[in-house]
Amino acid sequence: MRWIRYTAADQTTAAYGILEADTIREVRGTPFGETERTGKTHRLADVKIELPVVPPTFYAVGFNYTEHIKKIAARTGVSPDLPTQPDVGYRANNGLIAQGEPVIIPRDATDSVQYEGELVVVIGKKAKHLSEADALSCVLGYTIGNDVSERSWQKSDRTLWRAKNTDTFNPMGPWIETDVRLDDLETRVSVNGKESIRFPTNAMLFGVERYIATITRYITLYPGDVIWMGTDGASPNLKAGDVVDIEITGIGTLSNPFLAEK
Amino acid sequence: MRWIRYTAADQTTAAYGILEADTIREVRGTPFGETERTGKTHRLADVKIELPVVPPTFYAVGFNYTEHIKKIAARTGVSPDLPTQPDVGYRANNGLIAQGEPVIIPRDATDSVQYEGELVVVIGKKAKHLSEADALSCVLGYTIGNDVSERSWQKSDRTLWRAKNTDTFNPMGPWIETDVRLDDLETRVSVNGKESIRFPTNAMLFGVERYIATITRYITLYPGDVIWMGTDGASPNLKAGDVVDIEITGIGTLSNPFLAEK
Image 1 (cartoon, helix red, strand yellow):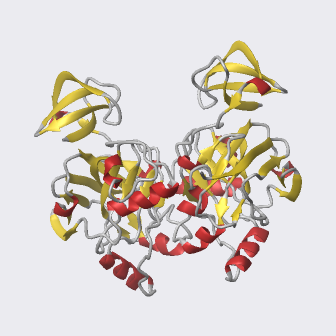
Image 2 (image 1 turned 90 degrees about the vertical axis):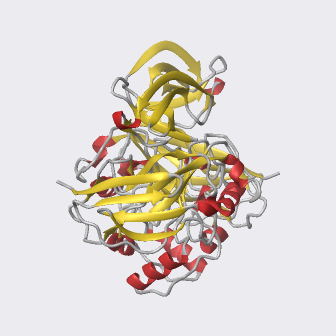
Image 3 (image 1 turned 45 degrees about the vertical axis):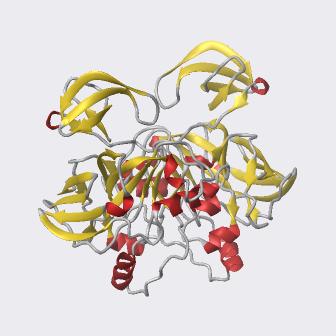
């Protein structure tokens, strides 16, 4: 099932609906609680797609695919250092934008602005002390994230706040798919319609189950929390005018243009 | 003026009020929008004090006082490395607890669980591209935070998620004071009633104005966001049964007991 959050022309606030092919079936409530179909429908092409969720906490995993770690290490001139345990990090909601909204490249960014195509886990239920075997029981579904990164700031700053969390640097969407077999997924990234990388989405150093079990040993996950699972490979430098499409098979395609700050 | 968020015996949800001596004057609305006095009052001793705000984003500054950087470096066996620019970090709301609520020390924590007494800036207005001269215009007021830290995890993990953001590791409160002259503040920390450190709160490497100007160059601050400003000195190891009081003169005293996980 696909949960979409959207604003129709006759709505003033965003609503959730169930997306079936190109038809949205509106519901009252949210997928994090009770919902009820209203009977109203919209065509997908007629609505503004909104963020699939505004997360209470925005978790983000770094260094979770071997090739990515090696390539980032080579670029920054250090030896690759594979993590030995799953340590999660955070981003903040200021950076989130929805399907189709533009990533704004700051005036003082260097030319090393790059995409990172990521699987996003959407938590559906409050969870603490889950085992790996039970970990997926708290998951509502999956969406897609683009963890846009300015590599010179990633190197110069002590934290990632500016390199990866500048306003508009965190596109997420287009919707939440609940019927997912993680091993079946493939991530495919295109720039201006030309594919630049594809990789098996679940070929992670530490998978979704391991991360959820580790986090919930110490931290309570809440409905709507998201966990961005990291990326593989390396990206070309992006410039104003580029459009980045991140497809994860079975989920959908997140598409965002890049523009220059005025 | 002091904004307090509380639950009275006859309330089912938290409300804001204005604290005058020991009397709370209830308002409709929140200090981040319009408020109106209801005429109702409570005695401070009769209410449960709640978190002064549930922040959209929880920013936290590390390494912002010279003595603290030197002491942490000595303990972890590296040379002290003074930051050359203000790079902010994040925590998550799962760790937040209110005045009087217990910090729960996890079963597998080592004995190096410590306090960090911090000034907390509470943002009142949406802000982007503020200069240092205008930075304080977006500030509603100030409260107090205890950035509880497990030092062995701080050393072993790639990020601070577990060392500083385990559930209950982020006491904040007791209320928001709007009338503050930063240079007048002194932070005083006591363990079980015995003072363990005092330091001038504003003797920071990078002050509140500098941090807000730097953050808002790239990131939009929103009403209710909080920025924890770091701490000075070093803490003794804490154990179950200890009570930590963090006073910042002119604001108040944040007091929390420490208990062991069952």
